[in-house]
Length: 122
Image (tube, rainbow, N blue to C red):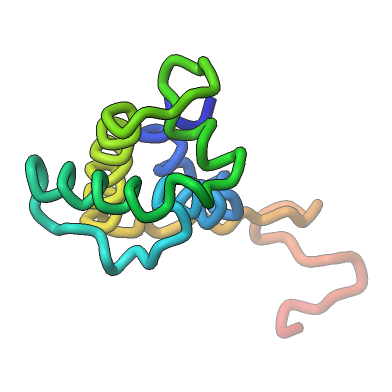
């Protein structure tokens, strides 16, 4: 589920508490700063190196995240494809500016009207 909709889920502010876990699945726990900045062949080569060094130590969640057909077997090619898509989403998410979040007034009072017994200066 996460892999298929990662491009959208990574941008939903309500899921911010989950982003760290999703990034860890996609990166196999490697540092985000190690992500190749240029796309295409460089990212694919980095993915293949990462697969070669980490294939035996991936968690079940990491394997599921990168297994596009869900057959339980993760090939080097499958990993390189999903890692490339994950890296593109991460690059795009890093490049986006944070927007101002609205602050909601959850009080029960009416705007401009004080509480009972309150004077205007309070």
